[in-house]
Length: 122
Image 1 (cartoon, rainbow, N blue to C red):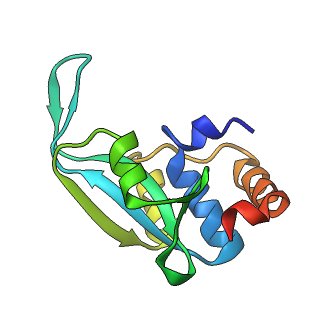
Image 2: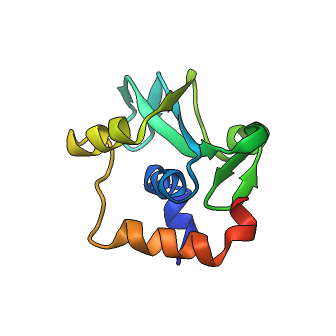
Image 3: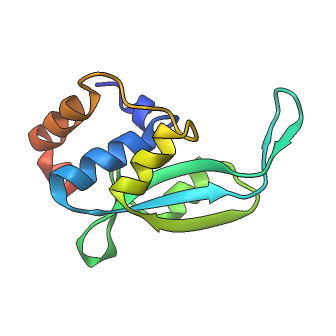
């Protein structure tokens, strides 16, 4: 599995798999003033990163355990907003085209990866 795919671009899908497999809460790290260098065009809101919060407020993404500092160092943002979300709301955002949608069998594949690498995610 290419973890970079789930760190940059499809992190919300990995977070959904973590939530389904381990029951963790999902948080979305939004940038309320995101800019794209390609066109110099401003977009109001963009997802910076999605991750989960496990027991004792430990954060997890595709890498395993992370800290808020890691997220802030690894991702660019201007005006951050962090919001807890439900799996249902995450699926709504995918259905609305706000976030990339699931590929066939993707969630099952990630969940199997998590089970096979449980030590990284607990």
